[in-house]
Length: 258
Image (cartoon, rainbow, N blue to C red; front, side, top):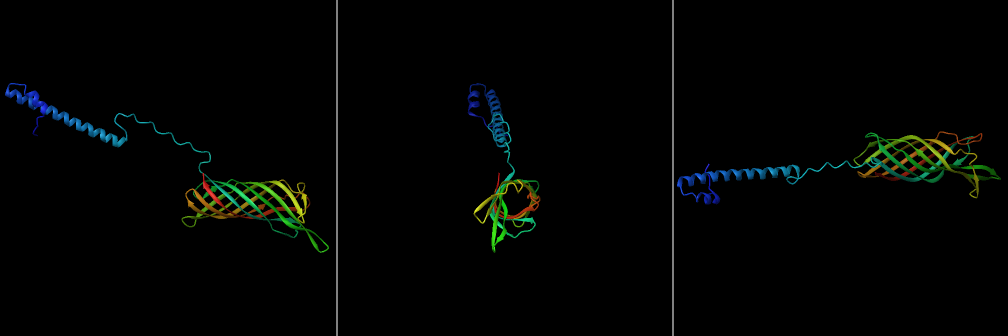
């Protein structure tokens, strides 16, 4: 390898009067400066690689890893708000003539996935149950009574969900429900209100069964529809007769990921 002398080495070597010593010093200075230049290039290349690997400036102290984000207490849950008409009736003994009683119901349902298919869905809901019945006939005129039982209910159904199309899913749910009566009354011929608190029990136990469709707008929001029924498991009539609540609900709502 041919060594090229630098201006500095030439200047120092020029002070030597002996010609042979001049060339010897010139060669030594050139070798030393060449080696220093090579080391400098190697050091710069190593620092550049270090910056690229660690994304940090030379000499910087690596920062401590960021702590994991704190999980919210509702993280992983989905929330559905449902509202729609309720068509209620009853199973009575002795049987009486009656018609469906229509009212408005709503539910707030949380969902926690247990697996890809199954979820636990605790919910709180409001519903008006009862029936419109014929109390008696007087002179060929039916005397009707509208039995209204307003309930605040807590249910714990299990949901099974299956994919139909990329955005469409069908689901089925079933589970127990406990209802607490907020009011128990009857409106006779739409004029006279009668308190039924002494006749009907304040609590009721039901079986909740339902099915529905979900349309996923995106990963965090879905539009849901639901058809479900409540089957009363307890006789809430304190008289010699018996009465079991029944209803069918049609719900439409939205579901959000929390």
